[in-house]
Image (cartoon, rainbow, N blue to C red; front, side):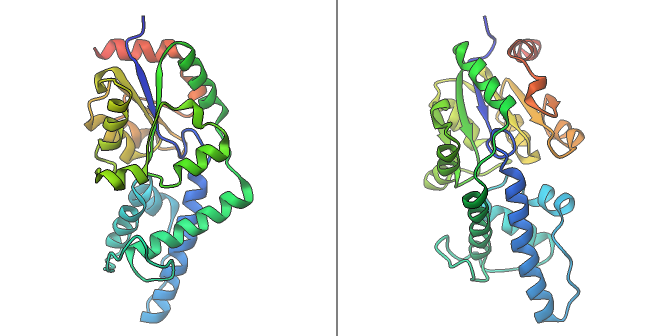
Length: 252
């Protein structure tokens, strides 16, 4: 008998190989903006970096929150604007929309890659009667899952669109995970969260879930452990249902 009833997966970097696409889209957008700004103000250009900027301020957060967090780190104040802002507008929303434009261009050209080990684990969990959900900050979730042909695997989807409609707090708050758990009819104490971002494992820990599994795609195992992951792997091929069950059991 299993000690848990549901597993809720983050999408980018856990299910789909879209985290690297996000990272490159963020870099392209911010480097273009920072370069123009530096030239306009006669300042030195400081590029947007993956380790110091993307992983620290942007990774896992809702799009506009990520823009605002990074700009704040650089001491840049821009009006928030409106989600309908043109991608060329110099607002938080405009920059976020510009990033999304770049992201969608790559998806259109290259398609969606999947982590086969994650898909295999999901199929194994489903075969044992475990409920599966996806919870992500991405507003592109529906399109990505559909393009990858895996929509049918998830009994619930709580994404950036749903979060905006319901006024949910983004990661590191646990709102999207607790709603996904509720939608599955499972208490957080009987559900597992699988995440690759620091803000995501923080959310899982805050939500008091049965187990928070960190997936260290970015050589960031230490950071994931320190911020709430109960166990960290580099790939879900290292995790079996029996191991998940044992880990949950030791925490009960």
